[in-house]
Image (cartoon, rainbow, N blue to C red; front, side, top):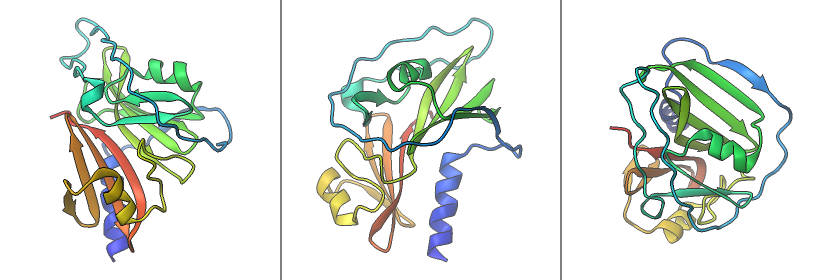
Length: 196
């Protein structure tokens, strides 16, 4: 029962479905293994809003004050425009899209080996709001991966967390990093931008 609750919470946090199925718009191939690295955060770049297409503007994120994610030497932070991510990581294996429940436009999920990047629309641009680590080939910047223990998480991130239903959530600036724990083992990792 607890596993079902954790799984339901993870899916509820990751997907913003409006009752419609996600539609794959690109499928590039198989998922090779990727290694995570520990790099310093890069600086943000502001992206202009397309006039008349949305009332939402990107949130200005200061990289040193948020959780960052590193993959293949690329440092990725919340609210980065997705074209910056694909410029560093290459083309995704797949892109899924559906009408946004919260924004004017299309929500997209960009799938890379071991990780998914969820975006929100601002005009014709897509900005990163969630990173979902999908397998143990990818780790956080502090080396936590699916299969790590709860004590590993606390050693890496400290004791300042919120705990609810097996989810341990750490907050830094406008970002949250959540670890879903089952039987003392990490079974889910989610980075999120606070869009409220």
